[in-house]
Amino acid sequence: MTNLLEVADLHVTYPGKGFRAQPFHALKGVSLDIRPGETVGLVGESGSGKTTLGRAVLGLAPVTGGSVKYAGREIGHLNRRERRGLASEIQVVFQDPYSSLNPSMTIAQILAEPLTARGVAAKEANARVADLLDRVGLPADAARRLPREFSGGQRQRVAIARALALDPKLIVCDEPVSALDLSTQARVLDLFIEIQERTGVAYLFISHDLAVVRHISHRVAVMYRGELVETGDGDQVTARPQHPYTQRLFLAAPVPDPDAQQKRRADRRALIDAQKASEGAAA
Image (cartoon, rainbow, N blue to C red; front, side, top):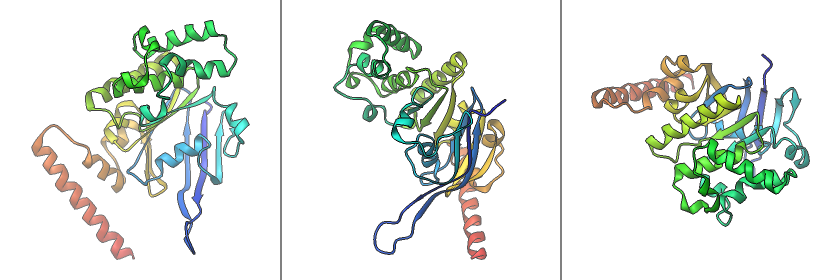
């Protein structure tokens, strides 16, 4: 199957700030691909480079080396007009739905905005809004309400509906459930899966939580200090990790059993200490 997204030897470097400041290498030779209808989970702690990779795909980070190809077309250096032309193909769902939704617009206006910008007639746009609300499990009367009238999980459903408005082939999901409680997280993750089964959309699903990517991903890629350190089948990487950093993420994930949780913490601390000792010896 032909890849939908291909990232090859990608480098993203930000110039240093201040006198004699060194440039910051956010991504160092990252390669990744996503097939149509597939979810690739991109996991790592804060500062690992996972969000930078998502931003590079969206044209929001400076690509200083390598390539980003969508459907065989290089998209790493598009101008604004060319990038707008990709809006119907690539969309995004951000971490904080409230800050990404215009608080003064009704949900109907928010969902209709990308449609009317594409020249869709008002009657057709209204019908599409009703369909989008139904897709994400929100009532029809939600169209008349403002974002502040919804819970965090409901606002994230609105953000998902907006991302679906133009029937994209790929959605970059940047920590889309990290601000939600656990029960709401599970429902929103199930919604992502249901939408994918119905539409065939592909996801680049970015998260710091290995348990979250395990729930939704076909394949998982693990980032550490701007590099990919482990990739593979979702079940394999999240249940039987091979790289020490992925093992640390695995041991950091909470479990219901207090005794098992205590053992995990001890194992993680021992692993961190061993890695520090190894790095010190190498230096």
